[in-house]
Amino acid sequence: MKIMNQYFKKFIKNKLIYYLMAAPAIIVIGIIFLYPVGYTIWVGFFKLSLTSAANSAKWIGIKNYLSLLKDPTLRQVIQNTITYVIISVPLEILFGLMSAQLLDPFFRGRNIIRALWLVPFMFTPVVVAYQWKWLFNDQSGLINYILMSLGIIDNKIAWLSDPLLAMPSVIITDIWFTTPFVTLLLLAGIQSLPIEPFESAEVDGASGWQKFLYIRLPLLRPIMLVVILLKTMDAMKVFDHIYIMTYGGPGLKTEVIMTYAYKIGFVTFNVGQAAAVSVFSLFLMLLTTGIILLLFRQKSLISYY
Amino acid sequence: MIKKLNKIILGNKILLFGLITIITAIVIAPSLWLFLTSLKNPIEIFQWPPTLLPHKISLEGYVSIFHGYDSKRGSYVPILKNFYNSIFVGFVSSALSLIIGSMSAYVFARGKIPFGKVIFFSIMVLRTIPLIALAIPLYKLISSFGLINSLTGLIITHLAITFPIVMFLMYNFFLVFPSEIEDAAQIDGCGPFKIFIKIIVPMSAPSLASSLILAFVFSYNEFLFALTLLSSNDKMTLPVGLASTISMMGIRWDLLSSAGSIGIIPCLAISLYVQKYILKGLWSGAIK
Image 1: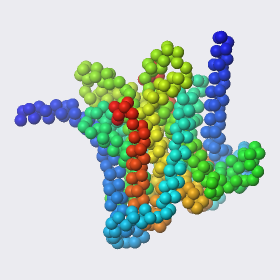
Image 2 (image 1 turned 180 degrees about the vertical axis):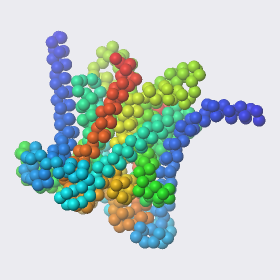
Image 3 (image 1 turned 90 degrees about the vertical axis):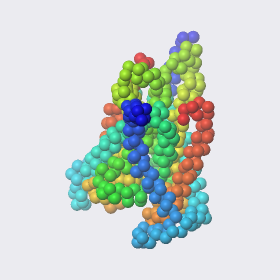
Image 4 (image 1 turned 135 degrees about the vertical axis):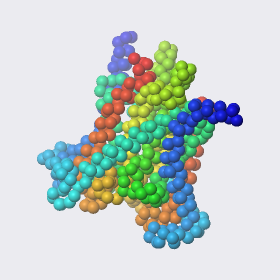
């Protein structure tokens, strides 16, 4: 008993504080994510519509999921989402890395340039979406005007309603809008790297490129993994600016998972089916996370995570 | 030889300068265009060919925002109130998420509690769930707390978006942060919480600073939860307020561009203010 008591006292003195420090995070996540996720999975088994009475929900098992898999639109939607992710994320990582690399060394006016390069990220997404929708506008858009006065194109192009150009247009918007986020994360990462390896490389006469390729990039790998994961997930969840700029059109050319789920849930009010789409997309994201973690699987990383 | 080397260095410098200028132009042009638009009158906005500088500066958008009243259409414009709401929500939720995020990241990264890394990764995975999937159940949950149409309810939901980002950044920082200093402090008889507050927090200032920018901007600009949880005009945050003016009266470019230009000020101010902490960081201090 006495030993127990002693152990308990020791626990309170040394360990309890750590549990208390982690508790708020776990509580917030529990309230905001766990309960709604459980609810969503549960609702996916019902035939439930927002327009019908609340107690009219009917248990239909996995029918929502089955009809989802049969839906030919879904294939197109997944294809679009993957295209969007595969094109936008690598470009953003590349540009972000380049910007972080440029902004790291000291030069006069660096602080101002740093703040300026963050500006796109600070705009409200709604404003960005409308702004770019208008820049891409075929009648009075600035992009058409610039391209025409440079003599690159002869006629006004309808960027957002052209089946081939709509996707590139929303991707360009995404790149402009979210690359600063990548830059900021990578810049913070670069600045938290230890200085010693660079010093010894300098003594050994390594060039700037060599230092970047063989020291900085490998050291950045853990933060790179986090950035790629965050960015991929955000790109898969893209909603705001596609909804505003193209509304998934023309046809289904820019319809992505989230706009699709939104239309099912809030336009046709089929809550059960929308929940099924959400669960399906969650599954897709877990799969992607798994693939990325596997790709990054390296000895040094396993010891990290 | 030295001349040649100097030439290369000069060439590099010019190249870097050119790159920085070009990128700055690409980054700034659309934002600047938005600002210039906010100074034009509604007719000039739709002119072809578009005019770069406004012929006659018109402050209609700004005037209706600051008066809270659109005299031309005789309608109420609550954008200034929405702007204050956004600042309030952004501040409170980013401050709370800095506390929650850095504490939990420290505990998880240092393996202070069993299954810490498992919990960390579970949170990371849960964060990936599409917010639209959460909107309906969250609405039910928040209304059972009686917090619908209140900023408190919105802040609670924003915490779930912002603190994981802080946690990820800080987690990575703590992984590369040497633990010897903590060991030394512990030997000197410093308690765990005191070590965290007195040693860890000051040393992680640069990472905390970039987390603060991210957390504030995400919460300040968050759209979907604010859209579903807030219903009255004077409770709405800026993004929702802007979206509602659009749906009511078509796209009001003067309002949208003026509010967009004003809306960026708090984020810009915070990032400029926080820059000095990013610079003052441990490692950059060690270099010079």
